[in-house]
Amino acid sequence: MHQFRNDYSEGAAPAILDALVRTNLEQCVGYGADEHCSRAAELIRTEIGQPDASVAFVPGGTPANILAITSLTEEFEGPLCAADAHPTIHETGAIEACGRRLLATRDPLGRLTCLGMEPLWAASVANGAATTRPGMLYFSQTSELGYVYTCAEFDALCDWAAERELAVYVDGARMASGCMAAGTDLTIQHIAERADAFTLGGTKNGMLFGEALVVNPRTARGRRAIERLPYLTKRAGQLTAKGRVMGVMYEAAFDPATRDAAGEVLYWQLARHANACAVELARGLADTGYEPLLSTTGNQQFFWATPGEAARLAEGLGCEPMAADDPSGTGRGLVRFVTSWATPQNAVAEAITFARSVKE
Image (tube, rainbow, N blue to C red; front, side, top):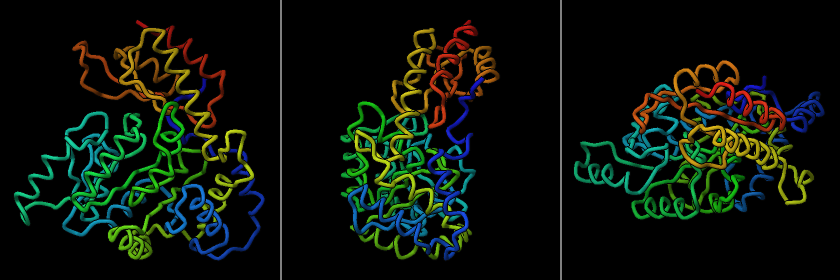
């Protein structure tokens, strides 16, 4: 039975794999200085509408977060983030190991809010040099628990940060899913216009690996980050000798020749498929009697299940059981279902049928 464990179980989307095979015997300059990385960066700048943006390719999401946070902040500063943000629960202290303290709010669902940040900011101002100074905002689109930010929410965060001269960084490991979520009004062009930095995730959207780290030079923090990034990347051991591999994949993903009738290049098409499968799966699970954590149109879906149901769902569908505080008080836990560019349409119906068979 098809597994709904994550969105990086498979290799690469066929068109991306074809591009790698086609360019396999080319001899390219190393460390991302090749023509494929150069063209991929230019295609991304065109797609996001920011001709002056810096675009660099790094192997994974945690390195991208490390590089963004350390380049945008001083040694005595840290990022404001939600309690359930990825760096706080899934990166094993990677940010702290680089000398930046995470300043976590009490916001739920991995969603950062101005209201949640205000007490941390007030404490920092009150205590001066005795407290880690906030230097930036960190949040992901979609959030760690599948929340999709609206344009109004995003603008509120950017306005709040601008008033305090803080940088804004959007972890886009699932940026494609967020931007292609049905009903969203937050576009990649708007994110690129206002954020100091963000990533366009490849690992979770049809590539073998890789994240594109985009930095906007419109602010002093952004310009400083662009200057520092090459040195920090090398020091962190993330300067990839065969950087051309990421260049080729992003070049294929953003190739204008792949635009469909909706005007979307391959990168967005892959996410649209993943989201459609996830929404169909969520609808079927809800009809079967499972309660969703929240209503979302991204490719991560979270549902409450009894311990017995969770164990059987994990065994049969590969979905991930998660400990959580059950508001019903009945001892349920969360189960995460994730779809991808490679999820077969018929597998969704099979999963719904299986989930119905284990419903207690």
